[in-house]
Structures are given as C-alpha cells and as structure tokens.
Image (cartoon, rainbow, N blue to C red):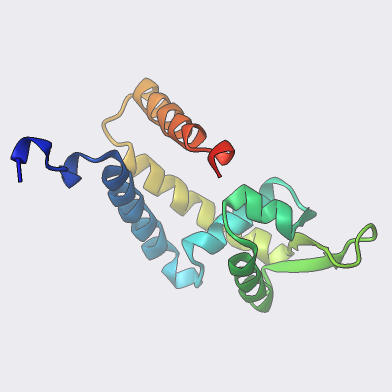
Length: 149
C-alpha cells in the first residue's frame, strides 16, 4: 500500500472529535459519579431546566437521542425522583416531562461541576478561540445535518 494515500487516523477529524468528546464525557462522568447521574441523564436534566413541559419526542430531539433510549433514561430519572411525567391534556399518548424539586436541587450541585470541566477543557484558550471552536463544531453538526438523513 502506498503510504502517501494511507488514512492517518490521528489526523482524521472524526477521530479527533470522538477522542476529545470521550475524554470530556469521562471527566464529567467521574465528577458526577457520587451523585449517581450519567452524562446522558445530565443532558436530560439540563434541557428540562431550560424548559419544563417538554414531550418525550421534543426532549429526544433536543438531546439527540432516540426515543427508546430516552424512555429508559426517563424511567431511571423518575425512579430517582428527579423528574415527573405529567398528563398531556391535548394528547393522551404523550406526557409532559418536568424536573422535580429534587431534580432542581441536584442541578444546583452538578452545574458547577460541569462548568469546571468546561473551564479545564478550554484552559489556555482565549475567549475568542473558545467561541470559534464552538462555532466550528456547530457548523460541522449542521453540515452533516438532518437534510442528509
């Protein structure tokens, strides 16, 4: 095989993003461990803190998860007393999902931990570099977006 046409995994955008994301998620997960919350559950709690009364479908779209996986996460969060499902008067098959007071109290503890990881991850970056990085990653997301599904 010609080495000049070989694929260099360490230089591949997807691998670089995956590796960085994995390390980031592992660090957040490590700090959340004592609270018995995963990074995926954290995403659910964050979205509900931004806006209560989301349906499961809306929530799945906003955290980029399929509905069966989200259902399992919601079941666990409800068992922990962090969320509740409320009847949707407009659709008997759908529920509104809300944070409980316990969920809100937990978010008060977890949010500073998540912010710490973000600060550490961007150590040495200027504010402008940080903003550019986020902007570029969002463009990658958009470039590979829903119109291609």
